Length: 156
Image 1: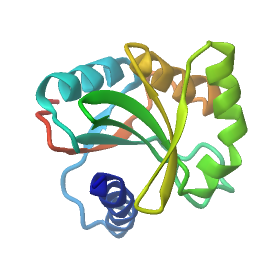
Image 2 (image 1 turned 180 degrees about the horizontal axis):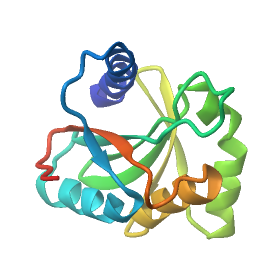
Image 3 (image 1 turned 45 degrees about the horizontal axis):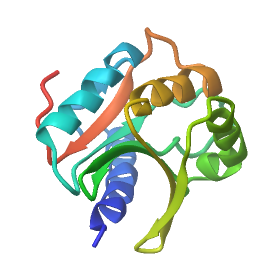
Image 4 (image 1 turned 90 degrees about the horizontal axis):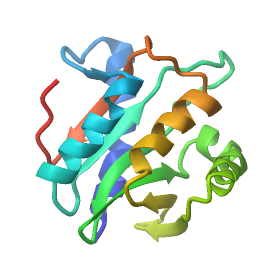
């Protein structure tokens, strides 16, 4: 049913592998300032199963994996997903929920196809994504955030 979550995980792993091996010729890259535009493009041109996976740069040299976050559309609603698949997401789950709680943002835990993730929906999803990347991981406006898109129109 929600096969896109599994596809997203495979795409993240594949993208990272191919990027490191030099086999990816073109890569979407966005900045923090462009995140609301990504959210809006997905909202306006996507449908159930459409998603945008965001891959910020590794900021801690000891991290072996990348942070796994995405915007996606489920049951007609767009949301921001904290995928509990990488060690970073699992390690920082409580920091993420503390950030949501401090901003009084409701979230729910979802499990689809054996993958658990925390999901927020509503108009603040784009700003929460920006806060997570900036406040929790130190991503600045100058840094490029790699992005994979599926099922919607994205024009860089």
